[in-house]
Length: 275
Image (cartoon, rainbow, N blue to C red; front, side, top):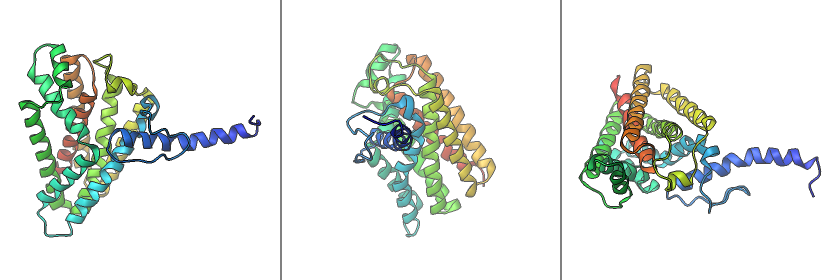
């Protein structure tokens, strides 16, 4: 039996260990990376408790963006064309995440624009097959992402472009958490329901982390570019939320993934708007 003196120590340990365990769970959820058990509070067999852990989603996004960003920076040391380097970085990122959010974007494009009835849209989104709208969405998304990254490499250098990629991945997941919190689930089942709804506190913390990431970008881009990136990300996120509400009445995991992808493009576009 624990003594009274042991209780504060145990609480302190929990406060220190819980965020690390939640971060490990987020990394497993959003990637194919084999994350080992990090401490006694970490159970690899369990989904993250997003009502508590959602504030760490942008942190997980930044960590998952680190290897592709390093690859981008290393490619900048060679004579490889910037567009080829950007495509390699994008491919590496999709390999690490299992193209989780890209799959969501394709499903949303097929479902939202391939049917007229809500239930049929949800049915299409659940189908593993990809249609014309989904294919076109992926071509435009991956292509535009690569072109924008290549443009940043040529303007500010590969190292700075790599940093901006990390910051954009973090900030795009911050706004994703906002949509997750603001909209009700469109289905009664599904992964988005099973993993829980983020709390308001977690959403606010995630938003602050995303904003902090953009402020770090001041080291390599002027304030107008970062302001443009922020405004475009907020507008695109609001647009995705309104579209999801009108088309299916709420969010799904696919909607959240699509929101992240659209916000990522908006951020990279904003970074490129000012010299």
